[in-house]
Amino acid sequence: MAVTSQGEGMGIAEANLLAGWIGMLGGVVSGATIGLWFHQEQWMGGYGSFRRRLTRLGHISFFGLGFLNLLYGLSLKAIPIAAPHALIASAGLIVGAVTMPLCCFLAAWRPGLRRLFPIPVVSVGGGIVALLAGWPPA
Image (tube, rainbow, N blue to C red; front, top):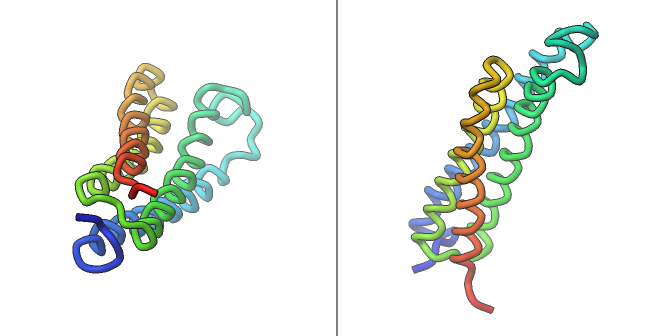
């Protein structure tokens, strides 16, 4: 059974589309928040500091993984991905979109928390592999 724009697939596609747009909003809000202090050269230890770099990465990851979820949601409407693969890919991409900015901000706050990064990396990587594994044969 494949997941398309009819029936069963609507829930999965809509979840990823919603996650994508929430990611866009997260990017805007985090960027506006960071923007309140970016003009201060020594904010968070200066432009090149670990804390500031991770904070910027968290901000950008909202957009990047938001776009990935949007593309996946739209892909489900265009390509019949096998149902179990579609669900695994959806979950992986959504978990990654939530945990990557969280890991970035937590690691900026407490550097030892950088050990959490395998969570979003494995989630997104697994989601992409599941999508490709469920891709219909040519």
